[in-house]
Length: 512
Ligand SMILES: [Fe+2]
Image (tube, rainbow, N blue to C red; front, side, top):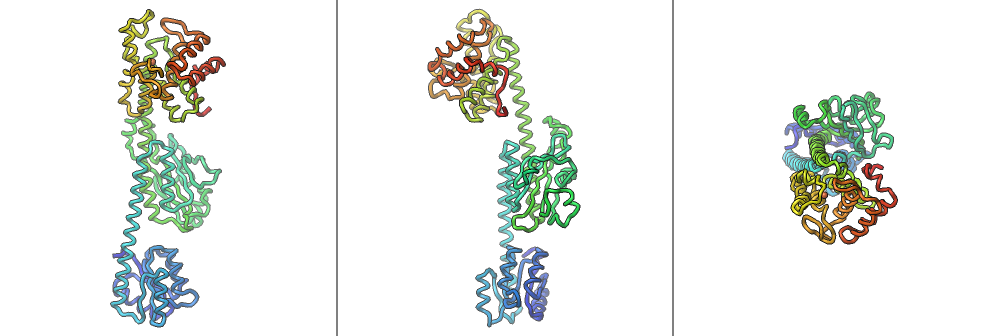
């Protein structure tokens, strides 16, 4: 069965044929519209999307039935056309079928013939509709599954916008994200938006996005040209059809409090706007439904991404405070972790390592000595020479650090291996695993030189820091033996030029 509102359109220039068809079809319980020519038929099709079946005569003045079928399918691609013809034009009827007509009926018709043709056509329409629905559902399912895989807010918003645009066939669009204080919205992602509007802010309540965010309601406008009030609200949309949907918050206030989100989180997290239909047509209620589903999934994912970031940040600051607490036990190593981080990041950047590797070093180097938390104060701060046993205890710290940090979810294997291997040497004389050569990747080689440099140049409980000349001599002695030559040379150059001192206090970033 077709939908309850399904209608049949009958087009014939002979009034008697139209009336006969209307009688037959109305008696069968169908809703029928009729038109005396192709132009009126096309107007009806434009205005009424419930028309699913078209009966048309072939020979009509000005525009033939075959031409009508071609035009009608542009307006309503799922429309099923059937031609009505006499024996004299049977060949044209067959040609019409080749042109896309579903079937033909011969005049004069019998009641049973019409009933059968209509039943077949409606069944086919229903199948086609179900197929289209299934395709929509499958695509939406894939979009929602993909949305849930993002870890970064920007990548998530970019994907949501692109998926929304392609799903409803829109040319332009944007995602406006509510600022943390809820007072405004800022453009976080855009496609096809004029340069001057990229990255703009709107106040909450202002413009179309501001209205949607404030009211938490979607807005679908077929043609903004017919809505002077809305046209006034937004200079950007001018004369196009658009849809704006809110991404509404899902967490309760209690859940937000638990995760320490700002207490006055706005109800709407963001607004998804799409504008200008590719086909030049108008957006429909169906498009609105699709976007609402996408927005719903996007809202959940956006909250999750933010939640994970909040938890990660809390976790990270806990771990960093562990590293700082450790340094508080030993005034001589004050600032060591941060300096080793700065030197490592600086060297990694100068060596042209990937941003990912640089960031792994940034965190790994900060935490490299965390395992000293498991070494007794009297050994750590001992001024006299260490006994063999005490030395063995000190040498446990890379493994203790590895074990303490291993359960921390957001630290990767690469972070953990930096912590475990920062005392390994390329000639195999290091600890704890006695790795050598190719077993030590560039990141481990960088942290080894940075740590050695800082240990030699800073004051310790048992000695003063070495002079730059002595440090250079020592580094040259180790170069190519325990430490990587290229990295050692890089440090020597920076020591000799004095540039290294800059990084004692300055953390290199990509924003410089
Ligand atoms: Fe260490």
